Length: 201
Image (cartoon, rainbow, N blue to C red; front, top):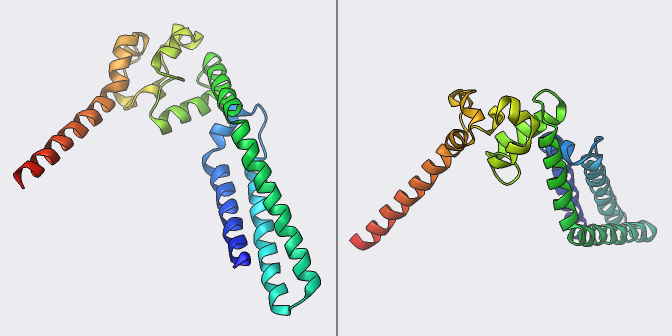
């Protein structure tokens, strides 16, 4: 059963590493000035755990004491590494959050719409349906806003964003928040219908 758990852990780390490399690349590029190797470390660790899990199965089938001792030593190293990683993540969680906020704010201040970090900011805003660090007013201090207004990636529907509207923060806020208001109204209507259905029963 330990070998099976090792396989599951290895497959999960491998999947997270591949997912991180394919999906989180833009987020990681905002945090790190130069590219980080975290996804590759996860992929390598996951692959190693799967290989050692297979080694554990082989050692069990062969009934070899030295192979089983080697497998037990590997399991203890994996446990210690996971424990250290978990404690480090918990202890440094605020520093990680502060680093992301600081680098994201810096990327917004240096936004020009053309470089890699600007494209990363656009990707984050589109994929998370957000605008700015806390909200759209964070763009008002950016040199880009003074010339161009908020970036089109702030708009829920970029075809509906008129360049003149993006210079006016009040109009821009309306364009950005239209979908949010629609979602809020849909939730209120859904709750109202559900409450009426319970009253009818």
